[in-house]
Length: 139
Image 1 (cartoon, rainbow, N blue to C red):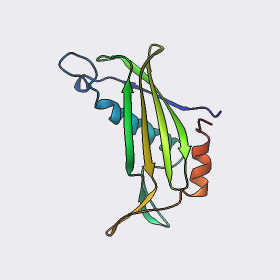
Image 2: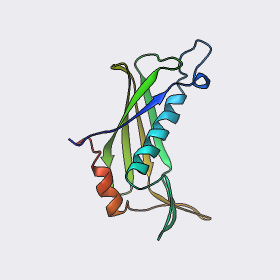
Image 3: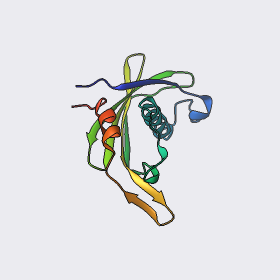
């Protein structure tokens, strides 16, 4: 099994609800931010200009299951793994912890696409990018 990508994120005041607990919706932002960090760490991005024109990673599925609450100024450790690497798509798994306690688990599936005036067209993930993503594979 390869090593996951790890990052940290502090819960900001704006992220909390009236009860002072991180609102469920911010975990989707946290997942996307961690995914972007992972892509930057391998020399890529969620939006690229290259031989195929403009490419990006539209989401086709997202989910998050919550295990415990976190509050303003709690620091989260976010672990990202590539759970599935298809020909044109990648599925990431996210694990959120605070002080060693599981807080949430989430998933994002994104498809590698060319973006243009005619809309989106899925493309095979380039071999070089695929190799780098495999370094974070859960298998």
